[in-house]
Figure: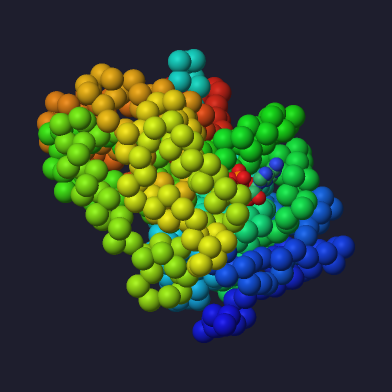
Length: 495
Ligand SMILES: NC(=O)c1ccc[n+]([C@@H]2O[C@H](COP(=O)([O-])OP(=O)(O)OC[C@H]3O[C@@H](n4cnc5c(N)ncnc54)[C@H](O)[C@@H]3O)[C@@H](O)[C@H]2O)c1
Ligand SMILES: O=CCCC(=O)O
């Protein structure tokens, strides 16, 4: 049975939000969105094409001329109203997230809070975009800077956090005075459209926020957003492979870029760690959203002295999970997003088994629940030649790698081409400092498996991309510094 929304008008099917209006695709074409738990139809959304996308860019361009002149305080009030409406409609937004993404309802509610907090955070940043006065080297000159919005921004986001990945971009963009065209993910567009409806109710001026959807035309829309001369910035969250394509395309008009890309997070447990704390942290980090977050631990390195104890305790916790439909009471872990994700997870498990790994929990699909379900899995005896060692699994598989020394494990951790998050557990302050400084990642959790916080800068190094979201730095991605030099200013006072 289809879930019910308290406010059914938040379910926007067959229309996108452009220039303050709800519009279908010019062609009238639509694509289907399916519940990953049951395969049932959730709704249909417009298949926007190039011309539709250009229309959204034109709307954002026209709106920029006046939106940029609003004061920071006015933009703060808009974001605050959008925040309040997001909180007021949290139950419905969470229902939409669970329906189209599959994550358990409690996790979906947590995501709505996380998502709303980016509106709140950036509403507080909007009135505080200060410039500088700079002592000039040229006599008689006076130099000051103003910080201006970069212009129209193209935003492209993934399905794994249908609300939070969008608000983490739109919040700072609007706070800075930019206007946006957001390309919602084909798997989870309905949450994005519900957020657009709340923007409308909050009084966001027409054209400032545009949300477009596509499935088959996604590559074409990506090309339009990355090459159109009126788009000044592209912010992308998704895989490293797609990030590279978008970066190449965006070079044609030298757009400003933010790239929040894939991870392959190491999680290290040293033998001086509090083992129970490490088990809890590793379980949280590894299995959040069934392993489908970019900061999920992907390689769990455990020092030899505690390997056995850690493995047993970790496996016991994983056996307590209840996998099922996100709306069902007591379910702790939902399905994967689609069959391609299941196939990848299964291939990583098989690869580890073939190379000598031992599956001590799970290791199988769960066809009885549905085609997208996979058992939470724990594998011991992992080695560095296995796929999980070098590739993001993005699923509920914990591979436990034994190691001997600090130097060895830091080298293993840093062997990845990507560097988004890393975690380690230790009680030795000197080791904590050494290892935190040595790991080549953008974010580190020390004695915790959960690092996401709107107040903390989020982003990676190496092939995990560049730029930071959230925090006091997030708004910088949407701002240009303009230098204004006044000449002939150093004249003596007139007598
Ligand atoms: N660093 C971060 O903050 C972060 C956050 C979430 C997910 N991710 C990464 O995202 C990946 C999982 O998401 P995914 O599989 O949906 O990634 P993906 O790169 O396939 O897709 C992400 C988004 O890009 C769109 N897209 C795909 N190809 C495109 C193209 N050629 N032009 C324009 N848009 C295109 C998709 O429709 C989707 O909206 C993982 O690698 C994960 O680590 C990173
Ligand atoms: O999947 C990536 C984002 C996860 C997060 O913000 O915690």
